[in-house]
Structure formats: structure tokens, C-alpha cells
Image 1 (cartoon, helix red, strand yellow):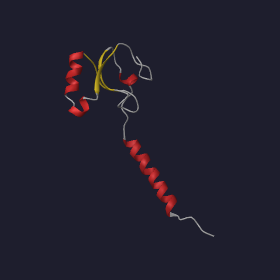
Image 2: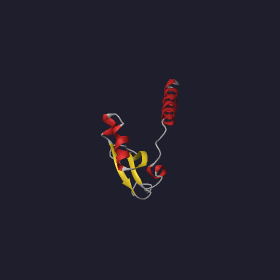
Image 3: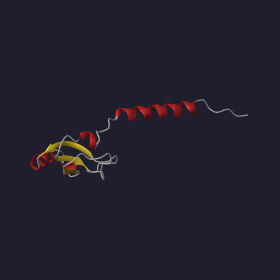
Length: 96
């Protein structure tokens, strides 16, 4: 009769605990619906690039101010950002 190694469950438990701690350390960005404060131009990373959906990084701005804020980002980040006009609060699926 063979007995399971006590090290295998301990290693699995350790891995689960470490992954849970790593996930807890990452603070998610507020959703588009939570970040919306009024009509205007918002600097956002689109849903195609951000896997959890679009993320607002600032706003509401005028269009010129939004482009100015986008230009302040590093070039590789600025190319992934959009200035989008939001006239009403987006729903939970980020549709306005």
C-alpha cells in the first residue's frame, strides 16, 4: 500500500496562497461607470487593449486638454490611449 506524499498537498496549498496574495495586491482600476463624473472628453485605454474592459485615466477634459494629458504618457502607452467624448454615464458594459 502506498501513501501520498505529504509534500504535494503542502506545495499545492502554498501555491494557492501565493497566487491569492498576488491577486489581492493588484488593485483594479475603477470601472468606467464609477469614473464618470460628467459630460466631456475622457482619456481611456480601450477595451481591445484592457482585457477587463475600457478604463478611464482622467476626465472630463476639453479635447485639447485630453490630448495634452495623452501626450504626457510614455510613447508606448500614449499610442494605446484614446480621447473619447462621453455625453452620458456609461452602463456597466461601458456603453454610453
